[in-house]
Length: 415
Image 1 (tube, rainbow, N blue to C red):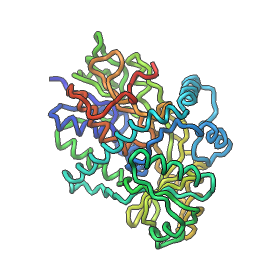
Image 2: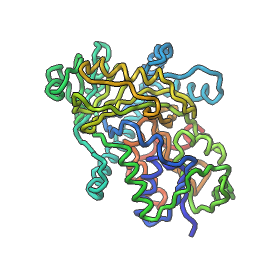
Image 3: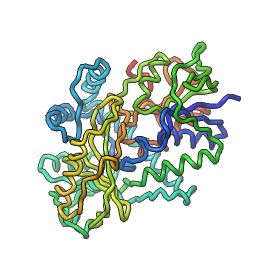
């Protein structure tokens, strides 16, 4: 029997392999990198059922235009003539409307809640994993009247969709963060959210899969596919040919290039983000988003990670130090007592989040193929949605009815 080949060894690929090996499927993972440091290892590690609105939403166009003039802004598209980028931007513009958001909410919410439940199961099954899953919620901290209005409106929307949301005063924030001042007009707390250490999760999963017999081919680049009819029979790599029973594209920001080789259209752009660790002094206790600057705050006891920015950059992985400065300068704007130190460049993590133009992932069978599946395009919610996405792909692979309705995640929706 030939193996199922997963192309892409990020957190999406690993969770897909995790659920497939539970079904007794022989799995082989190919990745063009060495899997030591990628988009899955240094992000904020947030599990966010509260994030029910896709990136393509009303207001993002006007905000994006105003942010274009600042190299430190939370969202940035580098203006350049690139046909692929222009097409992606046009599709993003078409998707950024209220009806798209309304249609997307149940799909994102249900996938997020499934993922959170699977993380809880994962923790019970693997207490040795030390992933530091902290179910303490997420606090959306705001300083301006305009953002307060947005966040409070969103809290009401979340409640309407069955999620808990608490509106906090500055005094409430002080009770949650007793160790240092938080400069804020207020905040919204989502008690159902959580966070974990993504590096520990990734390292544990990878080691676990190796022990379970999953084969990894690292530094292996896909060059082409050997097809017959509606099936892929083999993958041609820089190291030769590998025969496949089924193929699953989990290639993150590079999934669009892989789909092009297969002959179907999968619009995707890399959204570059940055993060860095600091000593958590004075200790920040609560995971948070600094909303005006879209900076994520993930505390892990003695250390804390600050991360953010969404720089639509294709697959360019160079560090833009001004964008890191934007994250760094946000720290003392909200936490004036925090002892922040600007990180050395070799300590700055960067990653490309795979962004579809409508802000929803691609989950399901590839158009025109009976043995090719896609699990990609999760944007900044890869860790948050990985278990649910992996579980669904394993069900489709095994010809079972998926646990969720997948219409919003159709792979060929832009074809």
